[in-house]
Amino acid sequence: MRWHRKLLTLAALGALSAPQLSAADDVQVQDQLQQMQQRMNQLEDRLQATTDQLQATEKKSEEQQQTIDRAGLTNTKGSSKIAAFLDTLTIGGWASASYWYNANNPASGNLKNANTGGGSNPLNPDANSFNFEQLWFELERPISPEARAGFRADIAFGQIASILNQVNAGTTCAPTATTVAGTTLSGHQVVAVTSPSQNPARNTCNQSTSVYIDQAYVQYLIPWGDITFKAGQFGTLIGYEVPQAPYNWQLSRGLLFSLFQPINHVGVLLSKTYDNGIDWGIGGVNGFGGPIGLNSQNSPDNNESKSILAHVGLTGDIGGVSIQALWGPESTGNDHQTRTTIDFIAHMKPFDWGPEVALNADYAILNGNLPGTANNLPAGFNSTGQRPGGQYSPDAWGASLYARQAITDKLGVSVRGEYVQDHNSFFCVQTGFFCTTVPMTGGGFAQVSGAAPLGFPNDNAKVYEFTGTIDYSITQQLITKVEIRWDALSNIDGVSTHGSFPIGYINNQPNGLFNYNHQLVAGAEILYKF
Image (cartoon, rainbow, N blue to C red):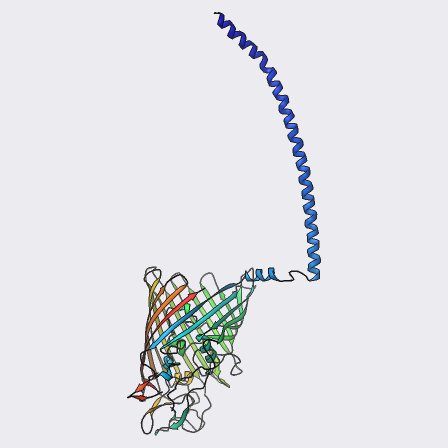
Protein backbone atom coordinates (compact mmCIF):
# COMPACT_ATOMS: atom_id res chain seq x y z
CA MET A 1 0.00 0.00 0.00
CA ARG A 2 3.06 2.22 0.14
CA TRP A 3 2.62 3.37 -3.51
CA HIS A 4 -0.92 4.62 -2.79
CA ARG A 5 0.44 7.02 -0.19
CA LYS A 6 2.93 8.42 -2.69
CA LEU A 7 0.17 9.17 -5.23
CA LEU A 8 -1.95 10.95 -2.65
CA THR A 9 1.02 13.05 -1.57
CA LEU A 10 1.74 14.14 -5.14
CA ALA A 11 -1.91 15.03 -5.76
CA ALA A 12 -2.01 17.20 -2.68
CA LEU A 13 1.12 19.09 -3.69
CA GLY A 14 -0.36 19.73 -7.22
CA ALA A 15 -3.53 21.12 -5.76
CA LEU A 16 -1.67 23.52 -3.53
CA SER A 17 0.55 24.83 -6.36
CA ALA A 18 -2.20 25.37 -9.04
CA PRO A 19 -3.55 28.69 -7.73
CA GLN A 20 -0.08 30.13 -7.61
CA LEU A 21 0.53 29.33 -11.31
CA SER A 22 -2.87 30.77 -12.37
CA ALA A 23 -2.19 34.01 -10.61
CA ALA A 24 1.11 34.38 -12.42
CA ASP A 25 -0.57 33.85 -15.78
CA ASP A 26 -3.20 36.54 -15.06
CA VAL A 27 -0.52 39.11 -14.37
CA GLN A 28 1.20 38.30 -17.66
CA VAL A 29 -2.05 38.55 -19.68
CA GLN A 30 -2.88 41.91 -18.13
CA ASP A 31 0.53 43.25 -19.16
CA GLN A 32 0.00 42.10 -22.73
CA LEU A 33 -3.44 43.72 -22.94
CA GLN A 34 -2.07 47.02 -21.72
CA GLN A 35 0.66 46.91 -24.37
CA MET A 36 -1.91 46.18 -27.13
CA GLN A 37 -4.09 49.03 -25.94
CA GLN A 38 -1.17 51.41 -26.11
CA ARG A 39 -0.35 50.30 -29.65
CA MET A 40 -4.01 50.74 -30.74
CA ASN A 41 -4.01 54.24 -29.29
CA GLN A 42 -0.87 55.02 -31.24
CA LEU A 43 -2.42 53.66 -34.46
CA GLU A 44 -5.57 55.70 -33.93
CA ASP A 45 -3.51 58.82 -33.44
CA ARG A 46 -1.58 58.13 -36.65
CA LEU A 47 -4.82 57.37 -38.58
CA GLN A 48 -6.42 60.58 -37.41
CA ALA A 49 -3.37 62.52 -38.47
CA THR A 50 -3.46 60.87 -41.90
CA THR A 51 -7.18 61.62 -42.27
CA ASP A 52 -6.65 65.26 -41.36
CA GLN A 53 -3.84 65.46 -43.88
CA LEU A 54 -6.01 63.90 -46.67
CA GLN A 55 -8.88 66.25 -45.97
CA ALA A 56 -6.56 69.20 -46.13
CA THR A 57 -5.08 67.95 -49.40
CA GLU A 58 -8.56 67.36 -50.91
CA LYS A 59 -9.70 70.82 -49.86
CA LYS A 60 -6.61 72.34 -51.42
CA SER A 61 -7.17 70.34 -54.63
CA GLU A 62 -10.77 71.56 -54.84
CA GLU A 63 -9.64 75.14 -54.38
CA GLN A 64 -7.04 74.69 -57.12
CA GLN A 65 -9.66 73.13 -59.48
CA GLN A 66 -12.00 76.03 -58.85
CA THR A 67 -9.21 78.44 -59.69
CA ILE A 68 -8.50 76.51 -62.95
CA ASP A 69 -12.21 76.44 -63.85
CA ARG A 70 -12.55 80.19 -63.29
CA ALA A 71 -9.53 80.73 -65.51
CA GLY A 72 -11.10 78.60 -68.28
CA LEU A 73 -8.17 76.21 -68.37
CA THR A 74 -10.06 72.95 -67.71
CA ASN A 75 -9.03 70.09 -70.07
CA THR A 76 -6.95 72.37 -72.25
CA LYS A 77 -6.00 69.50 -74.56
CA GLY A 78 -9.57 68.17 -74.60
CA SER A 79 -8.51 64.52 -74.56
CA SER A 80 -10.59 63.52 -71.53
CA LYS A 81 -13.60 65.50 -72.76
CA ILE A 82 -13.44 63.88 -76.22
CA ALA A 83 -13.15 60.44 -74.66
CA ALA A 84 -16.18 61.09 -72.49
CA PHE A 85 -18.17 62.28 -75.52
CA LEU A 86 -17.23 59.23 -77.60
CA ASP A 87 -18.48 57.01 -74.80
CA THR A 88 -21.98 58.44 -75.36
CA LEU A 89 -22.07 57.52 -79.07
CA THR A 90 -23.24 54.41 -80.87
CA ILE A 91 -21.21 53.75 -84.02
CA GLY A 92 -21.83 51.10 -86.65
CA GLY A 93 -21.98 50.41 -90.36
CA TRP A 94 -21.20 47.96 -93.12
CA ALA A 95 -19.44 47.47 -96.45
CA SER A 96 -20.92 45.51 -99.36
CA ALA A 97 -20.12 44.47 -102.91
CA SER A 98 -22.26 42.73 -105.53
CA TYR A 99 -22.52 41.38 -109.06
CA TRP A 100 -25.67 41.52 -111.23
CA TYR A 101 -26.45 39.59 -114.40
CA ASN A 102 -29.23 40.63 -116.77
CA ALA A 103 -30.65 37.83 -118.95
CA ASN A 104 -31.89 40.40 -121.49
CA ASN A 105 -28.21 40.83 -122.37
CA PRO A 106 -28.19 44.61 -122.88
CA ALA A 107 -25.72 45.92 -125.44
CA SER A 108 -22.26 46.54 -124.03
CA GLY A 109 -22.73 50.30 -124.31
CA ASN A 110 -25.94 50.14 -122.28
CA LEU A 111 -24.85 48.36 -119.10
CA LYS A 112 -25.12 51.43 -116.91
CA ASN A 113 -28.65 51.64 -115.46
CA ALA A 114 -29.75 48.74 -117.71
CA ASN A 115 -31.39 46.91 -114.77
CA THR A 116 -33.67 49.83 -113.90
CA GLY A 117 -36.22 49.55 -116.71
CA GLY A 118 -39.76 49.93 -115.43
CA GLY A 119 -38.59 51.16 -112.05
CA SER A 120 -37.04 47.85 -111.04
CA ASN A 121 -33.71 47.61 -109.21
CA PRO A 122 -33.25 51.34 -108.57
CA LEU A 123 -30.28 50.68 -106.24
CA ASN A 124 -28.73 47.89 -108.34
CA PRO A 125 -28.85 49.52 -111.76
CA ASP A 126 -25.84 48.21 -113.68
CA ALA A 127 -26.08 44.97 -115.66
CA ASN A 128 -23.38 42.31 -115.97
CA SER A 129 -21.05 44.27 -113.69
CA PHE A 130 -19.20 44.02 -110.39
CA ASN A 131 -20.30 46.82 -108.07
CA PHE A 132 -18.92 48.52 -104.97
CA GLU A 133 -22.37 48.93 -103.47
CA GLN A 134 -22.25 50.51 -100.04
CA LEU A 135 -19.82 51.75 -97.44
CA TRP A 136 -22.20 53.05 -94.81
CA PHE A 137 -21.49 54.67 -91.43
CA GLU A 138 -24.10 55.18 -88.70
CA LEU A 139 -23.29 57.62 -85.90
CA GLU A 140 -25.75 58.56 -83.16
CA ARG A 141 -25.91 60.10 -79.72
CA PRO A 142 -29.12 58.49 -78.43
CA ILE A 143 -31.53 60.48 -76.31
CA SER A 144 -33.02 59.44 -72.97
CA PRO A 145 -34.48 61.10 -69.85
CA GLU A 146 -30.92 61.27 -68.51
CA ALA A 147 -29.44 62.75 -71.74
CA ARG A 148 -32.19 64.54 -73.65
CA ALA A 149 -30.15 66.10 -76.46
CA GLY A 150 -28.47 64.18 -79.26
CA PHE A 151 -27.98 63.80 -83.00
CA ARG A 152 -27.83 61.23 -85.80
CA ALA A 153 -25.71 61.09 -88.94
CA ASP A 154 -25.72 58.43 -91.69
CA ILE A 155 -23.01 58.80 -94.32
CA ALA A 156 -22.77 56.54 -97.37
CA PHE A 157 -20.12 55.98 -100.03
CA GLY A 158 -20.12 53.91 -103.19
CA GLN A 159 -22.74 53.11 -105.80
CA ILE A 160 -25.58 53.88 -103.38
CA ALA A 161 -24.18 57.39 -102.97
CA SER A 162 -23.92 57.99 -106.72
CA ILE A 163 -27.55 56.91 -107.20
CA LEU A 164 -29.14 58.72 -104.27
CA ASN A 165 -27.23 61.91 -105.02
CA GLN A 166 -28.87 62.12 -108.42
CA VAL A 167 -32.40 61.06 -107.53
CA ASN A 168 -32.77 63.18 -104.40
CA ALA A 169 -31.73 66.21 -106.40
CA GLY A 170 -34.51 65.48 -108.88
CA THR A 171 -31.97 65.17 -111.69
CA THR A 172 -29.57 62.68 -113.19
CA CYS A 173 -25.82 63.05 -112.78
CA ALA A 174 -25.27 63.05 -116.51
CA PRO A 175 -27.54 63.90 -119.42
CA THR A 176 -29.45 61.15 -121.13
CA ALA A 177 -28.69 60.08 -124.65
CA THR A 178 -29.39 62.31 -127.61
CA THR A 179 -33.08 62.47 -128.44
CA VAL A 180 -35.24 63.95 -131.16
CA ALA A 181 -38.87 64.98 -130.81
CA GLY A 182 -41.58 64.12 -133.28
CA THR A 183 -45.27 63.39 -133.61
CA THR A 184 -47.16 60.30 -134.62
CA LEU A 185 -50.08 60.12 -137.04
CA SER A 186 -52.42 60.37 -134.03
CA GLY A 187 -50.83 63.66 -132.98
CA HIS A 188 -49.30 62.44 -129.72
CA GLN A 189 -46.13 64.11 -128.54
CA VAL A 190 -43.28 61.56 -128.56
CA VAL A 191 -39.56 61.32 -127.91
CA ALA A 192 -37.63 58.93 -130.16
CA VAL A 193 -34.27 57.81 -128.79
CA THR A 194 -31.68 57.99 -131.55
CA SER A 195 -28.59 56.78 -129.68
CA PRO A 196 -27.96 53.19 -128.57
CA SER A 197 -26.69 54.60 -125.24
CA GLN A 198 -30.15 54.87 -123.74
CA ASN A 199 -29.30 55.25 -120.10
CA PRO A 200 -27.81 58.03 -117.94
CA ALA A 201 -24.12 57.37 -117.42
CA ARG A 202 -23.76 58.88 -113.92
CA ASN A 203 -20.31 60.09 -115.02
CA THR A 204 -20.32 62.95 -112.53
CA CYS A 205 -21.43 60.63 -109.71
CA ASN A 206 -18.65 58.06 -109.76
CA GLN A 207 -19.44 55.16 -107.45
CA SER A 208 -15.94 55.13 -105.95
CA THR A 209 -15.82 58.78 -104.95
CA SER A 210 -19.46 59.77 -104.32
CA VAL A 211 -20.56 60.71 -100.80
CA TYR A 212 -24.19 60.83 -99.70
CA ILE A 213 -25.69 62.13 -96.45
CA ASP A 214 -28.71 59.94 -95.84
CA GLN A 215 -29.56 61.33 -92.41
CA ALA A 216 -28.27 64.30 -90.45
CA TYR A 217 -30.53 65.65 -87.76
CA VAL A 218 -30.62 67.05 -84.25
CA GLN A 219 -32.88 65.23 -81.79
CA TYR A 220 -34.27 66.25 -78.42
CA LEU A 221 -36.46 64.43 -75.91
CA ILE A 222 -39.01 67.08 -74.86
CA PRO A 223 -39.57 66.93 -71.06
CA TRP A 224 -43.32 67.45 -71.39
CA GLY A 225 -44.55 64.01 -72.38
CA ASP A 226 -41.13 62.64 -73.47
CA ILE A 227 -41.87 63.44 -77.12
CA THR A 228 -38.97 63.09 -79.57
CA PHE A 229 -38.24 66.13 -81.73
CA LYS A 230 -36.07 65.88 -84.86
CA ALA A 231 -34.89 68.65 -87.15
CA GLY A 232 -32.80 68.15 -90.29
CA GLN A 233 -32.72 65.32 -92.82
CA PHE A 234 -34.25 62.06 -91.60
CA GLY A 235 -35.48 58.77 -93.04
CA THR A 236 -39.07 58.52 -94.23
CA LEU A 237 -41.82 56.84 -92.22
CA ILE A 238 -43.28 55.33 -95.40
CA GLY A 239 -42.56 51.85 -96.73
CA TYR A 240 -41.33 48.46 -95.57
CA GLU A 241 -38.00 48.49 -97.44
CA VAL A 242 -35.10 50.88 -96.89
CA PRO A 243 -31.91 51.82 -98.79
CA GLN A 244 -29.67 50.31 -96.10
CA ALA A 245 -28.64 46.85 -97.33
CA PRO A 246 -28.62 44.86 -94.04
CA TYR A 247 -32.16 45.86 -93.08
CA ASN A 248 -33.96 44.14 -95.98
CA TRP A 249 -34.67 40.47 -96.63
CA GLN A 250 -34.12 40.87 -100.37
CA LEU A 251 -31.01 41.99 -102.17
CA SER A 252 -32.91 44.27 -104.59
CA ARG A 253 -35.60 46.85 -103.76
CA GLY A 254 -39.16 46.36 -104.90
CA LEU A 255 -41.53 48.24 -107.18
CA LEU A 256 -43.31 49.97 -104.30
CA PHE A 257 -39.97 51.27 -103.04
CA SER A 258 -39.08 52.77 -106.41
CA LEU A 259 -42.47 53.87 -107.78
CA PHE A 260 -44.38 55.05 -104.69
CA GLN A 261 -42.16 55.71 -101.69
CA PRO A 262 -39.72 58.45 -100.65
CA ILE A 263 -36.36 57.73 -99.03
CA ASN A 264 -35.89 60.69 -96.70
CA HIS A 265 -37.10 64.21 -96.03
CA VAL A 266 -35.76 67.56 -94.88
CA GLY A 267 -37.91 69.17 -92.19
CA VAL A 268 -39.08 68.64 -88.61
CA LEU A 269 -40.70 65.61 -86.97
CA LEU A 270 -42.41 64.86 -83.65
CA SER A 271 -42.84 61.25 -82.53
CA LYS A 272 -43.74 59.20 -79.46
CA THR A 273 -43.80 55.49 -78.53
CA TYR A 274 -45.90 54.23 -75.61
CA ASP A 275 -45.43 51.16 -73.40
CA ASN A 276 -48.64 49.61 -74.76
CA GLY A 277 -47.14 49.40 -78.29
CA ILE A 278 -48.86 52.45 -79.82
CA ASP A 279 -46.62 54.96 -81.58
CA TRP A 280 -47.20 58.04 -83.74
CA GLY A 281 -45.31 60.67 -85.68
CA ILE A 282 -46.15 63.90 -87.48
CA GLY A 283 -43.99 66.48 -89.23
CA GLY A 284 -43.58 69.10 -91.91
CA VAL A 285 -41.13 68.48 -94.77
CA ASN A 286 -39.91 70.13 -97.95
CA GLY A 287 -40.74 67.42 -100.43
CA PHE A 288 -41.04 63.83 -101.51
CA GLY A 289 -37.39 62.72 -101.71
CA GLY A 290 -38.00 59.51 -103.66
CA PRO A 291 -35.60 57.08 -105.36
CA ILE A 292 -37.16 57.74 -108.79
CA GLY A 293 -39.15 60.86 -109.52
CA LEU A 294 -39.34 63.92 -111.67
CA ASN A 295 -40.26 66.01 -108.60
CA SER A 296 -38.23 64.36 -105.84
CA GLN A 297 -36.05 67.30 -104.82
CA ASN A 298 -35.56 67.54 -101.05
CA SER A 299 -33.48 70.66 -100.46
CA PRO A 300 -33.96 73.39 -101.37
CA ASP A 301 -37.70 72.96 -101.77
CA ASN A 302 -38.99 73.02 -105.34
CA ASN A 303 -42.00 75.18 -104.35
CA GLU A 304 -43.08 77.42 -101.50
CA SER A 305 -45.57 75.03 -99.91
CA LYS A 306 -44.63 72.26 -97.51
CA SER A 307 -45.86 68.68 -97.18
CA ILE A 308 -47.28 66.88 -94.14
CA LEU A 309 -45.84 63.51 -93.06
CA ALA A 310 -47.82 61.39 -90.56
CA HIS A 311 -47.73 57.91 -89.02
CA VAL A 312 -49.64 55.86 -86.46
CA GLY A 313 -48.83 52.26 -85.54
CA LEU A 314 -49.48 49.43 -83.09
CA THR A 315 -46.94 46.72 -82.22
CA GLY A 316 -47.74 43.54 -80.29
CA ASP A 317 -46.10 40.27 -79.31
CA ILE A 318 -46.42 38.61 -82.72
CA GLY A 319 -46.34 41.61 -85.08
CA GLY A 320 -47.74 45.02 -85.82
CA VAL A 321 -49.63 47.30 -88.19
CA SER A 322 -49.14 50.92 -89.20
CA ILE A 323 -50.56 53.55 -91.54
CA GLN A 324 -48.47 56.38 -93.00
CA ALA A 325 -49.39 59.36 -95.16
CA LEU A 326 -47.62 62.13 -97.09
CA TRP A 327 -49.60 65.02 -98.52
CA GLY A 328 -48.60 68.27 -100.18
CA PRO A 329 -47.56 70.04 -103.38
CA GLU A 330 -44.66 68.17 -104.97
CA SER A 331 -44.46 69.69 -108.46
CA THR A 332 -41.68 72.12 -109.30
CA GLY A 333 -42.92 75.70 -109.18
CA ASN A 334 -46.51 74.62 -108.54
CA ASP A 335 -48.13 75.15 -105.11
CA HIS A 336 -51.58 73.98 -106.23
CA GLN A 337 -51.18 70.46 -107.58
CA THR A 338 -50.91 68.08 -104.61
CA ARG A 339 -49.76 64.50 -104.34
CA THR A 340 -51.25 62.21 -101.67
CA THR A 341 -49.55 58.95 -100.72
CA ILE A 342 -51.16 56.46 -98.31
CA ASP A 343 -49.00 53.60 -97.05
CA PHE A 344 -50.06 50.50 -95.06
CA ILE A 345 -47.68 47.99 -93.41
CA ALA A 346 -48.49 44.78 -91.53
CA HIS A 347 -45.99 42.20 -90.31
CA MET A 348 -46.27 39.16 -88.09
CA LYS A 349 -44.47 36.03 -86.88
CA PRO A 350 -47.11 33.96 -85.07
CA PHE A 351 -44.84 30.98 -84.31
CA ASP A 352 -41.17 30.74 -83.43
CA TRP A 353 -40.71 27.87 -85.89
CA GLY A 354 -42.77 29.39 -88.73
CA PRO A 355 -42.12 32.07 -91.34
CA GLU A 356 -42.24 35.79 -90.77
CA VAL A 357 -44.59 37.52 -93.21
CA ALA A 358 -45.23 41.16 -94.15
CA LEU A 359 -47.60 43.12 -96.35
CA ASN A 360 -47.00 46.60 -97.76
CA ALA A 361 -49.68 48.43 -99.78
CA ASP A 362 -49.62 51.92 -101.30
CA TYR A 363 -52.06 54.29 -102.98
CA ALA A 364 -51.07 57.61 -104.59
CA ILE A 365 -53.06 60.28 -106.41
CA LEU A 366 -52.37 63.65 -108.05
CA ASN A 367 -54.95 66.41 -107.63
CA GLY A 368 -55.05 69.68 -109.55
CA ASN A 369 -53.86 70.87 -112.95
CA LEU A 370 -50.42 71.24 -114.40
CA PRO A 371 -49.60 73.93 -116.97
CA GLY A 372 -49.58 72.33 -120.42
CA THR A 373 -48.67 73.15 -123.97
CA ALA A 374 -51.08 74.08 -126.70
CA ASN A 375 -49.50 71.74 -129.29
CA ASN A 376 -49.56 68.00 -129.72
CA LEU A 377 -52.28 67.50 -127.12
CA PRO A 378 -54.34 64.31 -127.07
CA ALA A 379 -58.08 64.40 -127.52
CA GLY A 380 -59.91 65.79 -124.49
CA PHE A 381 -57.43 68.56 -123.68
CA ASN A 382 -58.15 72.22 -124.32
CA SER A 383 -55.72 74.79 -125.71
CA THR A 384 -54.20 75.49 -122.28
CA GLY A 385 -53.22 71.89 -121.72
CA GLN A 386 -55.99 71.07 -119.25
CA ARG A 387 -58.81 68.59 -119.41
CA PRO A 388 -62.37 69.91 -119.30
CA GLY A 389 -63.78 69.83 -115.80
CA GLY A 390 -60.87 71.48 -114.01
CA GLN A 391 -59.55 68.49 -112.02
CA TYR A 392 -57.51 65.71 -113.57
CA SER A 393 -56.32 63.09 -111.10
CA PRO A 394 -53.99 60.30 -112.23
CA ASP A 395 -53.59 57.68 -109.52
CA ALA A 396 -51.89 54.35 -108.82
CA TRP A 397 -51.91 51.53 -106.33
CA GLY A 398 -49.71 48.57 -105.52
CA ALA A 399 -49.10 45.78 -103.02
CA SER A 400 -46.08 43.76 -101.91
CA LEU A 401 -46.17 40.47 -100.01
CA TYR A 402 -43.04 39.23 -98.21
CA ALA A 403 -42.13 36.03 -96.37
CA ARG A 404 -38.93 34.67 -94.84
CA GLN A 405 -38.28 31.28 -93.31
CA ALA A 406 -35.21 30.64 -91.17
CA ILE A 407 -33.84 27.21 -92.05
CA THR A 408 -31.03 27.32 -89.48
CA ASP A 409 -29.49 30.05 -87.34
CA LYS A 410 -27.32 30.99 -90.33
CA LEU A 411 -29.47 30.13 -93.36
CA GLY A 412 -32.74 31.71 -94.51
CA VAL A 413 -34.98 31.79 -97.58
CA SER A 414 -37.25 34.72 -98.49
CA VAL A 415 -39.66 35.58 -101.29
CA ARG A 416 -41.39 38.73 -102.50
CA GLY A 417 -44.29 39.22 -104.90
CA GLU A 418 -45.57 42.60 -106.12
CA TYR A 419 -48.26 44.04 -108.34
CA VAL A 420 -48.69 47.72 -109.25
CA GLN A 421 -51.12 49.52 -111.54
CA ASP A 422 -51.65 53.14 -112.50
CA HIS A 423 -54.40 55.10 -114.25
CA ASN A 424 -54.06 57.98 -116.68
CA SER A 425 -50.25 57.89 -116.85
CA PHE A 426 -49.47 58.39 -113.16
CA PHE A 427 -46.14 56.53 -113.41
CA CYS A 428 -45.23 58.32 -116.64
CA VAL A 429 -45.77 61.72 -115.06
CA GLN A 430 -44.14 60.95 -111.70
CA THR A 431 -41.25 58.67 -112.66
CA GLY A 432 -40.84 58.80 -116.46
CA PHE A 433 -41.55 55.06 -116.72
CA PHE A 434 -44.38 53.32 -118.60
CA CYS A 435 -45.07 56.27 -120.85
CA THR A 436 -47.29 55.33 -123.78
CA THR A 437 -45.36 53.67 -126.59
CA VAL A 438 -46.66 54.41 -130.07
CA PRO A 439 -45.56 53.39 -133.57
CA MET A 440 -43.52 55.92 -135.54
CA THR A 441 -43.96 56.63 -139.25
CA GLY A 442 -41.66 54.30 -141.15
CA GLY A 443 -41.54 51.67 -138.39
CA GLY A 444 -40.11 51.48 -134.91
CA PHE A 445 -41.51 52.65 -131.60
CA ALA A 446 -41.14 55.69 -129.39
CA GLN A 447 -42.37 56.80 -125.99
CA VAL A 448 -44.87 59.55 -125.32
CA SER A 449 -43.08 62.28 -123.45
CA GLY A 450 -43.58 62.51 -119.70
CA ALA A 451 -43.60 66.29 -120.20
CA ALA A 452 -47.06 66.07 -121.77
CA PRO A 453 -49.76 67.44 -119.43
CA LEU A 454 -50.46 64.68 -116.90
CA GLY A 455 -50.21 61.82 -119.35
CA PHE A 456 -53.17 60.50 -121.28
CA PRO A 457 -56.64 59.23 -120.37
CA ASN A 458 -57.05 55.45 -120.16
CA ASP A 459 -53.29 54.92 -120.28
CA ASN A 460 -52.95 52.26 -117.58
CA ALA A 461 -49.72 50.35 -116.85
CA LYS A 462 -49.80 47.02 -114.99
CA VAL A 463 -46.53 45.66 -113.65
CA TYR A 464 -45.60 42.75 -111.40
CA GLU A 465 -42.44 41.10 -110.10
CA PHE A 466 -41.37 37.99 -108.19
CA THR A 467 -38.13 37.63 -106.24
CA GLY A 468 -36.48 34.72 -104.44
CA THR A 469 -33.52 35.23 -102.10
CA ILE A 470 -31.23 32.99 -100.05
CA ASP A 471 -29.22 34.57 -97.23
CA TYR A 472 -26.39 32.88 -95.34
CA SER A 473 -24.32 34.24 -92.45
CA ILE A 474 -20.75 32.98 -92.72
CA THR A 475 -20.07 34.70 -89.39
CA GLN A 476 -22.20 36.99 -87.27
CA GLN A 477 -20.83 39.97 -89.21
CA LEU A 478 -20.23 38.47 -92.68
CA ILE A 479 -23.45 37.88 -94.64
CA THR A 480 -24.02 36.68 -98.20
CA LYS A 481 -27.14 36.79 -100.38
CA VAL A 482 -28.01 35.37 -103.78
CA GLU A 483 -31.17 36.40 -105.62
CA ILE A 484 -33.15 35.88 -108.79
CA ARG A 485 -35.82 38.38 -109.86
CA TRP A 486 -38.38 38.51 -112.68
CA ASP A 487 -40.23 41.70 -113.67
CA ALA A 488 -42.97 41.91 -116.27
CA LEU A 489 -45.13 44.62 -117.82
CA SER A 490 -48.56 43.10 -118.41
CA ASN A 491 -49.88 45.74 -120.79
CA ILE A 492 -50.57 49.40 -121.32
CA ASP A 493 -54.25 49.56 -122.13
CA GLY A 494 -55.25 50.63 -125.60
CA VAL A 495 -51.75 51.23 -126.96
CA SER A 496 -49.36 48.87 -128.70
CA THR A 497 -46.14 48.45 -126.76
CA HIS A 498 -42.99 46.38 -126.71
CA GLY A 499 -42.55 47.02 -123.00
CA SER A 500 -40.22 49.00 -120.77
CA PHE A 501 -37.11 46.88 -120.22
CA PRO A 502 -33.87 47.37 -122.17
CA ILE A 503 -32.54 44.84 -124.63
CA GLY A 504 -29.33 44.92 -126.62
CA TYR A 505 -30.44 43.59 -129.98
CA ILE A 506 -33.74 43.10 -131.79
CA ASN A 507 -33.59 41.30 -135.14
CA ASN A 508 -29.80 41.66 -135.07
CA GLN A 509 -30.05 45.46 -135.03
CA PRO A 510 -28.49 47.61 -132.26
CA ASN A 511 -31.33 49.30 -130.43
CA GLY A 512 -31.37 51.47 -127.34
CA LEU A 513 -35.13 51.62 -126.90
CA PHE A 514 -37.02 49.89 -124.10
CA ASN A 515 -38.24 46.90 -126.07
CA TYR A 516 -38.97 43.90 -123.84
CA ASN A 517 -42.04 43.54 -121.63
CA HIS A 518 -40.11 41.42 -119.12
CA GLN A 519 -36.72 41.20 -117.44
CA LEU A 520 -34.87 38.44 -115.58
CA VAL A 521 -31.88 39.37 -113.41
CA ALA A 522 -29.74 37.51 -110.89
CA GLY A 523 -27.47 39.02 -108.26
CA ALA A 524 -25.08 38.09 -105.46
CA GLU A 525 -23.90 40.22 -102.54
CA ILE A 526 -21.39 39.91 -99.73
CA LEU A 527 -21.69 42.29 -96.77
CA TYR A 528 -19.69 42.85 -93.59
CA LYS A 529 -21.27 44.62 -90.61
CA PHE A 530 -19.18 46.43 -88.03
